Image (cartoon, rainbow, N blue to C red):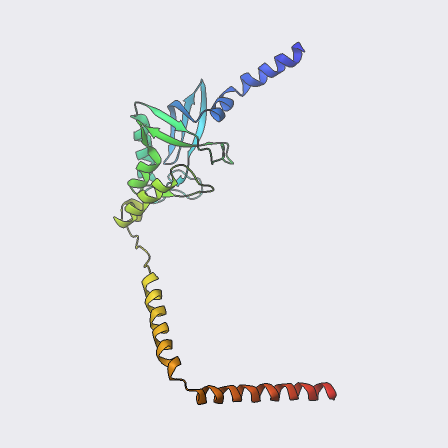
Length: 217
């Protein structure tokens, strides 16, 4: 019994940071190391944890194969400056998200002095909304911020052209077709209808006779 208790305590001690992170919605951390625009390392409870900012993607600045993308350096510098100069950094876990990604990084919302860092990056055209695998807490806020950045052609959206909305074209086209049908149908007299019906019946009879002859051969 004592051995079992000691083993349980050992497991709790070894994995204590992970257990606490999983059970708390928000935790306060300090910056350990800047990485790039959407990742960083933080000090928490005597451990260094890797974090991936949830629901956004910034251009690459230090990728080993892609290299540096446009606005990658600016996004990385913005994030690093915000985290370095912050009086308080808070991480929030989304109930609709996995706790870790495939690289064992914690998926989190990042608050810098009570401002959502993801939203600030999107506002400044340094990130796009991405990796939405569920209905996350602040998805709608990020999408609204992105729409504004696109409209104003900020940052990565400098050459962005909003797609045209053809909804009214379809509506008007449908109305025109209905009006034309309303004008044409009443002008079809009974004689015309009977004429086309007779033609149709004659064709059907011809096909039936043809198929019957094939069967009799």
